[in-house]
Amino acid sequence: GQLDEEEANAKVRRLIAEEGDQTRLALARVLRHLPVDRFSWVGVLLLTSNSVTVVQEVGRSIEAKPSPAYLPSLVPLLGNRDLRHAARRALFAIGEPALDHLANALAEGALPNKLHKHLPRTISGFGGERSAQILAAALSTERDEAVVFKILRGLGRMREDDDALFIDRDLLLGVARQTATRSITVLSWRLCVEEAARDSEVSPATDLLIAYLREKETAALDRVFRLLHIVEPSSGFRMISAALRSEDNSRRANSRELLSLVVPQPLRDAIVALADDVSDGERLKKASVLFEPPGVGTLARLQRGDGPVNAAYVALMREMLADSSPALRSIVSYCAAELGFADLRSEIEGAALLEDDAMADVQRQALALFAEVG
Image 1: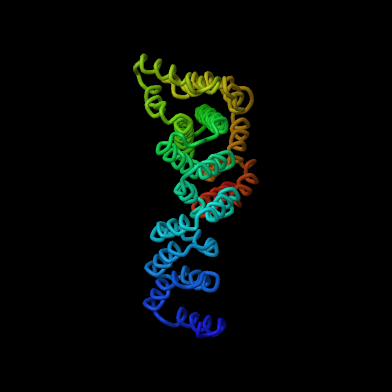
Image 2: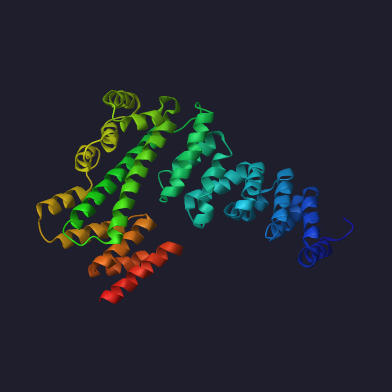
């Protein structure tokens, strides 16, 4: 109080800008003793420091004297492994305003992926019914499957810690249905690619596409079981998942009976079909009781030999290029380029605008391959 506000602010700014990390560390430590409404800008400025030690100390000061004023500066720190723990502790100390801020960020999906993917774990760390509701609601809109997986892990931990925690059962079963539908769709795509590849030269990209689709199908089914585990943590869905894939007929029968106690039809039959130890074609036929994807018709045409194989293959790839997965779009782009499907060039150019980093590089290579061919 011995200096007026303007003079005090000018002196502190000079200390931050001109002195070394030891001075900045001292300011970080004293921050918890200063009036937040007047000096929160100091913490905001120090949070941009290149010194991990300084930023961590600011985090401890914010824990001691929390304020929503720090929220826009704390969230970006979630993308830094060295600072993530300190940022989360500060956010937890800020409490409800921080949870509101994170809920909006998760719903809007406007943050860079390196930040967005750390929101579910941070939100689940607040605990309580509201955090669970935020995460459950995000399952219906989140398009990044890696983020969905993190949401499911967070909700799973919360329900294991407190099985009385309220969750919207109907919402989660609805998401489980959508996820099973995804598994069925990807299974149909893979069978179509395999059938089309019988009549054309198999390329490395085609092999990669088949392997990737197989992995996506399995991952989607695993997410279904995670969702069911959240709905009923005590029902042993991890055990049921393993039993459905067992070669032991009695174990499979018992697991189907347990499924019937929790999972409504036709979702239950689709899950059993997807996990069954029969041919892929039979699995697709049985699982279609829940949802019959367009790929079923394409597969039938390919198997009957109705029309040119390439025409059906191009239509299938066009469908996959509209998918939400950047990795899938990129692999399909390169596969189409290898096969010389020039009709897809405009779709690949459009998909390339959606990608970033490594995925964008794959798209550029695909377009360059088109240029070489034609």
